Length: 136
Image (cartoon, rainbow, N blue to C red):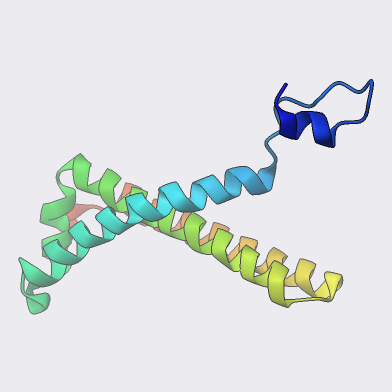
């Protein structure tokens, strides 16, 4: 037992060697890891659609050619998923900090979660069911 543990524990009590991980701890880790992954995903996405290709050529046929390869569908779905989760978690932090009324905070969070879930479902359906042959 270290000196710091000895000075903070009561005599006769067993020191808590490992603190339990709670939701906020995992949420904090998720924000750091997803932010790092999102940085590279967004950089690649931005480079492909705005630097290597002319913006005016980004049409349905451009997306159809790109999504003919399953890798790009997974890439875009990962960007969508992590972006929504990261943003929703960040908004949750902001609401906890600035919305003091518990009822108003619960209502705003419920709306935010419903909107994020709807956007996730809509985006996932779009990526999964997109038919390149309809692009002409």
